[in-house]
Amino acid sequence: MSKNILVKAIDVTKNYGQFCALDKVSLEVTRGEVCCIIGPSGSGKSTFLRCINLLERMDGGGIWVNDELVGYRREGNNLHQISDAQISYQRRRIGMVFQRFNLFPHMTALENVIEGPVHVLGEPIKEAQERGKTLLERVGLADKANQYPSELSGGQQQRVAIARAMGMRPDLILFDEPTSALDPELVAEVLDVMKDLAASGMTMIVVTHELGFARSVANTVAFMEAGKIVETGLASEVLSDPKSARTAEFIKAVHS
Amino acid sequence: MMTAITQVSSAADQQQYAIAHLKLVPKRHIGRMIAAAVVLALLAALIRAFSVGQIEWSYVAQFLFAPAILAGLYNTLVMTVAAMAVGIVLGVVIAIMRISGNPVLSSIAVGYVWVFRGAPALLQLMLWFNLALIFPTMGIPGLFEFRTVDIMTPFVAAVLGLGISQGAYTSEVVRSGLLSVDSGQYEAARTIGMTQMKMLRRIVLPQAMRVMVPPIGNEVIGMVKLTSLASVIQYSEILHNAQIIYFANTRVLELLLVASFWYLFVVSVLSVGQHYIERYFGRGSKSIRSAM
Image (cartoon, each protein chain N blue to C red):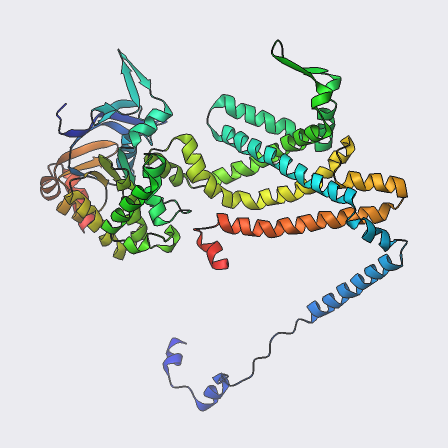
């Protein structure tokens, strides 16, 4: 595998009973790339994203992050499921930002950010606090460090969530519809933080309905429907000049 | 109608709607006043009945702070703490086993709750106390061995009996607490690389506490009174000591009143403590903060 490829998914399949949520999805994301996954609801975008950090188990295929197969260990012709502790270890390098923020409500913004560094990575608390404050400053919330999530707006909570993901010094951050639960006027502040993050060279896979964001920030776009990747390519090409009629129809519908 | 509102109303109409200067007369709660008067009258009658009844209040005063009663109170508190500690530890372990998804562990948890919630606490106490009848000695062959009667003192039997049966109830409280935490919290904890145990300890249990504290507070209060069962197996808690005194001086009701006073006192103190604990675990929650 090329040194530059950070995420490589091959033929990822996932079934819920009879329903095929993911049908042989393959995707490559290079280091420093921003990849947006777009598509209608129920097309499997979020499910695919959640397979990358094993919040969902796939039924077939494989995903490599940093050349390491996630969730399994290969021995000869067998794939063995790795232990829960090993899965936790793999997840350290893969950050995630959720649609509903999922901040820890019993901790302040700063405590949310340093929870992983201190209690998972074992950083000294003073050092983690310093770094946590820097991260909160970077997302524009230096003055909210000691506020609880319930005292913050949706946009502020999502920015704390991004800082929390960055706190783990990940190779990759997954965004699962990060602006879908926000009031329209708060979307921009979150997208700005994400733009800044992209500019700093972070590898990002973003499931989103924000085609404007995809157009201005994403390097590549993948369009999914019914559990398949219908079209993938450079953002400018897929969004402006889609090859598939279905992609064109979707983009037109979202813009109208 | 809509058009009528926009028209200039007549002078008579304006008269009718000009009420800003009128005096507000609050609603009179006649029913409440009558009820309060009746309750006060009944209370007075009750107090009178007790004061003219065959109670020697001097005995109540004399024994309220008697060393045997205070020692009994101390033992009651020790037993409450010990049995509740066993109950909470077992409750947490059993609840985690129950939701673990491991069929062996969850079957054990279901079986435990079934057995120890099914038998009366008093009966369980007596079973532990009389364990020597079926197992005269216990231990690991070749390593160590002891006579069961030496180990199974009233204290140990009561802690085991009360704690283990309490664990069955507490596990259900803990389980409902764990289920009350949003699944997004479990996912967020996993994505920052937490292991199962760390996730439970750092993220899930602290949030579950908010739901668990009120019922566990009730259980602690219940346990204060449940320890009186240990009087049956000769553990010298407060009721047992009161009984020993009234067997000697025949002042039955006076000593029962002494014991009731102390139970009520302890329960009142605990209720106040519960309020503060709830406030602590409610931190970060808007509804509780604004209520403070």
